[in-house]
Length: 439
Image 1 (cartoon, helix red, strand yellow):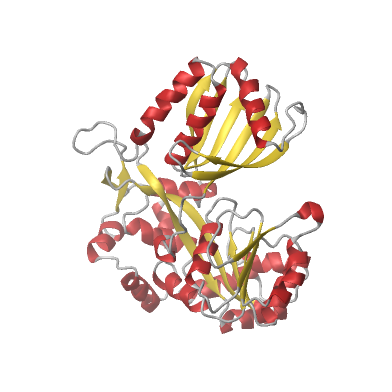
Image 2 (spheres, rainbow, N blue to C red):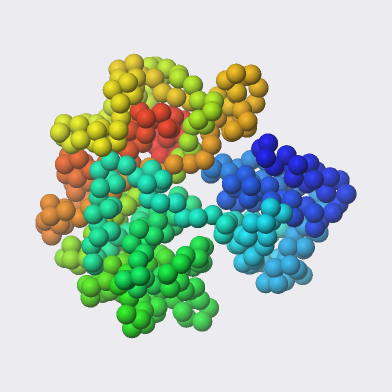
């Protein structure tokens, strides 16, 4: 990236000079300034390399001689103070705070893994200098925006966020807490780890090694006179039990769970031996989300997808969509007639080229990739009276989803179609991160 060219040059020089300290200093600065989420320092058969994950995609940063690898890993182990430098047979974990050369405070969650060639080190970056974005900047639009704003005003119940690791669940939950974080309420969070320190919140770090678990906290947390609680993750039936009990005693509870869609959360909860009437009495809203790479605003251009086979699936997203609900959705998302006709009639989308539109040299914003930053696509499933009735009748999850979609629920597929129409995303990214398994 242009803004980090000087640090990349310093990194190259540090490798040539075998200066391990400067390698680390410049590496962390490059990763943070380029918005990377993870750093991979990995040995291969004949050499080692460093890769950084930017907008969900790994990019190779540099290759270096293998004789330097042991020194780099040992240097980090010693500085962490939490890893044994002489232990090379077992994986080790560490959490380290650091400051980049641009004076940004970061936390690193690191793990070593013994491989057939040597130890691999992966560091997840938590940039503490970044502010939590408001909900309006996350990509929550239309009826989804109205739904989440409504349920944030509820005094009690459970709001769950679901999807795989590193899909933005944490940021969304923090943004929700920011919306309702006022002096009149007592908010307590228990996290593992505490990624962002927020004002006016009581944040606690889980310590499973001393039996300070999510379930144990929920038992004691009720004595802290909370109005709102956030449980980092529901991993077992005991934690779910306490979360439901907390919601039934007048508290608003936020948490996360790992499932593939909002409706599959029903199956997950039932598999934890909970009866439907308990879900009906406690669940307010389930959110599913995914992060897709945004088209670069500087170099995006119009392209035709008229012959793309994936259009058939796109068209199916609107099958059984109530016409009145569809019209309201288009209006609430500020989709223009030009945007709607351009996609639905002419089948045009926008795609980043990675080249400057004036000079046709490398794009100064996205640096060849065609993408810059990420945007969330969201699925909101409110537990309406209709859904609660179907749950009490022991209807299957797919039947509940079908009914919800017919009434106008915006699932992931519909949300990303609307964002393609608005020229924010392209087909490649959407199908890579959401529907890749279909093709």
